[in-house]
Length: 237
Length: 287
Ligand SMILES: Nc1ncnc2c1ncn2[C@@H]1O[C@H](COP(=O)(O)OP(=O)(O)OP(=O)(O)O)[C@@H](O)[C@H]1O
Ligand SMILES: [Mg+2]
Image 1 (cartoon, rainbow over the protein chains, first blue to last red):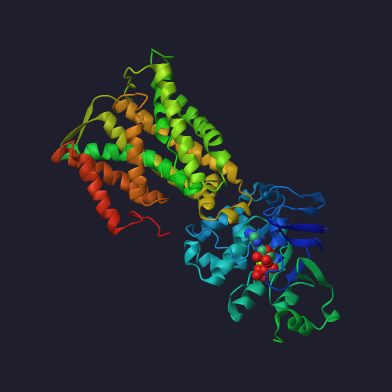
Image 2 (cartoon, helix red, strand yellow):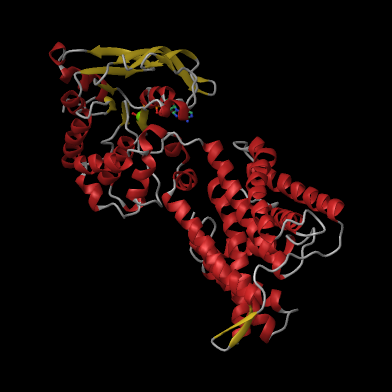
């Protein structure tokens, strides 16, 4: 298993947000997370990356216990996260931000080759390389954010709502590109509101509700996803 | 006219070195280091003590080298003792004003205790005068004028190309995204302080070679550097550098044409007027 989360509890101040989450991601596997707003998806991912302290439970990455480890130690092992709605580094050029993506020691010396791979997946970033991040369009910024994550040569890449606020056309484009990322061999964890999009990318999904795993979907034929849409998003789209 | 420009460029160069260190720390940590002037003084004393026959007598180059090494360590120690304990506390900006003012006073008194109040001066790296475009100037002045842009260029390259330089800028712009790339914020803050102190030390050596070395020699330059950083636009390094040269030149022109007593008044008037028009400074970002 690349990532194993066991009975994880965490939260902010006096409020506990996660009440015992268990999940696992295999080597090269893509796993999707979805669920209503404010029910703890980002908190789960931030806790895994060491940005929010673990209160109870375990996190293991490639067999190593990383519970309570610092974010830089976790990143050092190749567990990379692209945060939700990241504005990246507003006054850096795309190329500078990408270069910095290779900050972790294992990635730094390979940054030229990795950059070529990133540009192959996101040709638009090559065109925009000398533009400041703050002047990128929403879609381009997401591509840049994912590109920066790829520059770290992830063993596991976490994408927290990569298509947030984007128009359908650009969502399709991004979904296709995330598919290409999955082919690089990195395991993926993707959060999205769009269950169809997730099903296209990930064979396995977790529904996160009220800080718990409400449902694990191992096989897309196992359920009628219209049901889920209706139950959790109040739409039958 | 030529002499005014030379004087303006020399002060501008020195202000630029001092202020860019201050600006770097402000940009990355959001605090002002009030011990920056004292660091400059410490650098000058270290260079003097290592080089001068009254100290170790190892010669000027050994003195400058020792100063640079010492300053990197001094910047790191200053960060660990006076800044790090308060990182992440709600009033960190204010607390760090207190701790660094205290640090500055301590260093000043320590220098007075060790070296006494007698004026000291560093040897000049180059001696004699040179004449450029009809203007005669001390070779040392010319050296300062040439060296400052070289050092500032090196700083710009460090910030644009090196891993640690990019990390300093990243933390200033998006702390969490920086952490998620594995950047160790604490280490990067330390590097920022070390680089900033190094620049202060170089400025100290320049001042020590042109003027005198005294325990209070850093106070005036620190005040100017604050003006420069605010005037240039908080957190903008290019703004800081442009502002440094502008202020150097305005000062030199005003001391020449208006007189030395009215220069501060003239300078502040110009700055206040410009800040009325551009409240965020020359190249400052709106908040
Ligand atoms: N920094 C914080 N401090 C305090 N509470 C927080 C913080 N971040 C999130 N929360 C709270 O934790 C709960 C879970 O938020 P979280 O961001 O994990 O949800 P989410 O499932 O990612 O939602 P969304 O789909 O809107 O991104 C919410 O009630 C939120 O208000
Ligand atoms: Mg979220």
